[in-house]
Every structure is written in structure tokens, then in C-alpha cells.
Length: 261
Ligand SMILES: C[S@@+](CC[C@H](N)C(=O)[O-])C[C@H]1O[C@@H](n2cnc3c(N)ncnc32)[C@H](O)[C@@H]1O
Image (cartoon, rainbow, N blue to C red):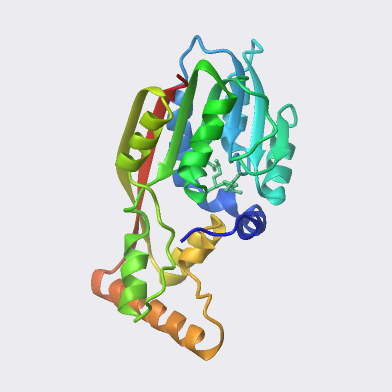
């Protein structure tokens, strides 16, 4: 399932005010990307899909006491840009599709992207990253793999729903192939599962909504059938909760590191 860009922008703008409350995993992953920035790296940093600017703020902190980085951030959701801009006023912001940015060719020394390119055409996103990256520039990114939201996929199926509601995520192998085709160098793509545990169905659904991944948990079918399907979906999750005493949600993180070739 690929969502229309406008819908993605709307979904994330709506989530901008609540995102940080539910983004502990995203922040943890961002921190890992930031920790992998080589000490000697300096210059232009671009955050593709910056969201509320948490990573941007951590990178800005690395600017003290020396001005090490010039920060640029891209996001398609105006609501996200607004929050990020208030957080890191010194950065340059562009509210646009990260697959087609207004940035000049070969300008970035470091491109960071966390939990954003799964909403894009992966090839188009990586092509744009390659275009704006300087030769030898570093890409540090993460996205989500196909293991993500597996519990929700099966819950919808058990509720008798045949539609594909949960996002289709590219596998590590696919991403590795794309990086190879685009002639990135020293590519490393590693996946890792994180399990988040929730005490109630409401908590789980609320958390998905807060991070803007709403399409995984709502029905787009209009009318009575849609409402009934949604009740059945919730009933499946309630059944699991009473059987296991908790509900879990797996996120498969895919860590990417590569040099622009
Ligand atoms: C899950 S959030 C991650 C935000 C941030 N990088 C973080 O780690 O917290 C995904 C972000 O990607 C943005 N996004 C999704 N598709 C995009 C696109 N095509 N171009 C630019 N931004 C996009 C969304 O608006 C949202 O802010």
C-alpha cells in the first residue's frame, strides 16, 4: 500500500503535536545514527524527513563549542516543520517531498534519515540522497522492514478483512540491492527487531496514531461494514490481550550506512 503524498503530509501534520510522546523508539534509533557520526565529519548535514526535529536538535548540540555543521531539514508535513523550526531555529527548512528537494547537486557531507523513507518510493528517495550527497558523503539512515506491524496485519486478517491496510515495507535485501544499483559504496544494511509492549488495546492504537502511522489501525471502508470490521479488529486484539496479559507490537528497524559513490 502506497499512500498519496498529500495524505501522508496531512497525517503527519496532524500527529505533530503528539508525536514526541510516542516516539521513544524513533528517538532511540536516531540516537544510534547520531552516535555513528564520525568525529572528524564536518560540513553540511541534511535530515530527510526531520519530523519534530529531535535528531536535528541533537546534531545541533554537537555544534558546540565549535560550529561543526550547517543544518538543513526536509519534511513533507507543514505541521512537523513548524515544530522542528521552533526547536532548531538555526537550521534551514524545506517543506517538500524528500524524493525531489530543491537542494543543489553534491552539497551534503552527511545525510541523515530516520523512519521516513518507508513512506516513500525507496529507489526515488535514495536517488535523491545520492544526488544531493557530495562524492564520499555519508548516508546514515534507518527505515522499517516488513516485520513491522505483523501483529496488526494478522489481526486484520483474523477480523476477516481482505484489504491490505498495513504499509508495505521494503526488506533489507531490497534496500541493499537498490544501494548497489545506485552505486553507493561501503553499504551496510542491518535489520533488528524491537518489541513494544502495551497494556491495553487503546494504548496500542493511541500510540500508532500519535506517531502518524494511522493507516495501520483505522478502517477506510465507509459505513456499517467499515465500523463492524474495526470492531472485529479490536475484538481480535482484546482476545490476545486477555490470553497473553499484554499486547506487543514488533518494529523491524533497518539500519543503513553507505557512502555516496
Ligand atoms: C515517523 S516520522 C520520523 C520523524 C523523525 N525523522 C524522527 O526520527 O522522529 C516520519 C516523517 O517523515 C515525513 N515524511 C514522510 N514522507 C515524506 C516525504 N515523501 N518527504 C518528506 N518527508 C516525508 C513525515 O512527514 C514525518 O515527519
